[in-house]
Image (tube, rainbow, N blue to C red; front, side, top):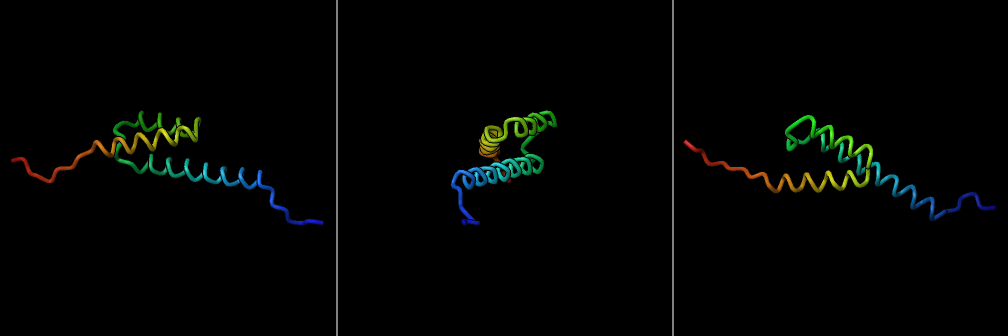
Length: 80
C-alpha cells in the first residue's frame, strides 16, 4: 500500500498555479507602487486586465512597464 505517490500531473498543476499566483501578485504590487502610470484610469485598466486575463495581462503589463522605463530619461543638468 503506497501512502505517498507523486503524481506528475498534480505536481505540474500545483507548480503552474503557484507561478501564476506569484506573477499576478508581483504585477499588482508593481502596479500600485509604480510612479510610471500618470492617470488613475490607466491604473484601473491595468488592474482589471490583471484580474480578468491574469497570465496574458501580466505579460502585457510587464512589457508595457519595461517599455515606459526605457523611454524615461533623467537629466541632472540645470537649465537656468
